[in-house]
Length: 176
Image (cartoon, rainbow, N blue to C red):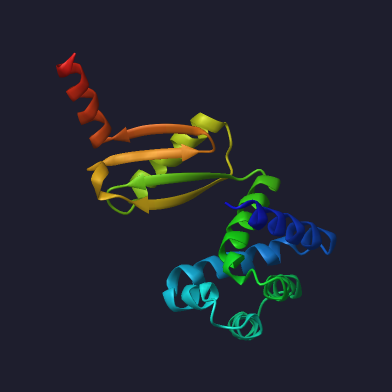
């Protein structure tokens, strides 16, 4: 994350906490992240140096018209400062800061195929074992190059139970 995105996210979280609406803004930020991930056109508009900041602001306010006033003020501030391209990163930073403030651990799970319920249960138990936390959110990334199993990251902890890692270990043993 960029430092600027984190600074904006901290300011938004502080404002949301003052008005006791951090949970509503959290939902807004999840919506922003989801919308931006699913719309390459919108991401291109936000990055475009040709489109005026005012036009970007109008587009964003129209798309996110149902959002909380704090979220709308963020959009207006980013447009005013010509930083609308940071919106997705600010939203992701807010989500991370909010989860941290609530004691929620976010586990990044990389798998070769989407997580099944059985695999999700195994991963959650491993996260609880690693962190001692019962409040866990899973983010699943698909990477076919790991062949099978999973790679789990929680903060700076990593647990690699991928087939590719096991094959590399065997290969290193044969070489030495």
